[in-house]
Image 1 (cartoon, rainbow, N blue to C red):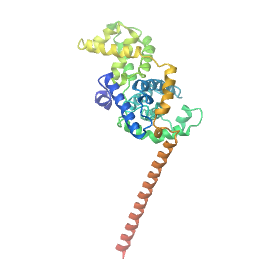
Image 2: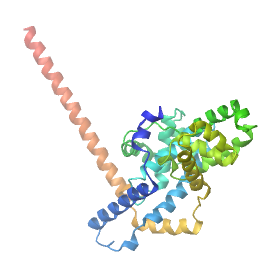
Image 3: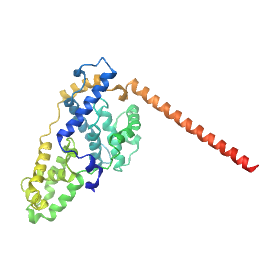
Length: 323
């Protein structure tokens, strides 16, 4: 299924450099656009750099994950994985200065829950994610759900590594006599921790779900797992697969969270450089939304008037034919 999926065709990139290139383009495109619109912001120091944007993306990836874990009943890890993947995809081609990751995190969670059939209404959703009513955030989610879907190119099905992990654990149990790996369940917790941490990185955009699941077990079990890898590869492409697993392991294990001071510094800078038209607390955002709603109302009125005119014409025609 994965090999025929949109995830495989469009969202598995060749290298980390390609991810960086896409984000750099998004960053520079936003800066160029804002400079044309606002001559007061002419210095590059007033905008976020690519590195600063990534600090916030890491921080809000963790924020998104923590939000999901608070839900009751518990959210399936597949839904959490989907929301994290949506978040990565969205900011692959969109600058943090255009849309704040805080708002997009909630938007990604809400959409992922729908796709993964974790049934929750918008009111129930807001009751679990906020301690106080937040109508601005609620309206942002409702107003921008289609925008998120468009940014994801309407590719909503996510294959996560959590299901392959279960399959691999079952397979390891049946082949314990050949691999020498016994009591596989002892490694489950560390493997699941590895997968949870991997959600904060970009491995979901670089490797297949089964490769990430293999890397989780490789990290949890250690060198003895190489016997199983060799069996899977049938002595062919063993080195290629092992190198990929080493790269995934290195990316996840060496991942470092930004300091609180770094996050705070970038947040303060973002207040100056962000697009007010996408800030639910700004007057420009509400002006734009009111204009859009008025346009929708006018469109509805036009369609209603067209329908009334058609009904009048039909009534006239029937009256004419009955004479």
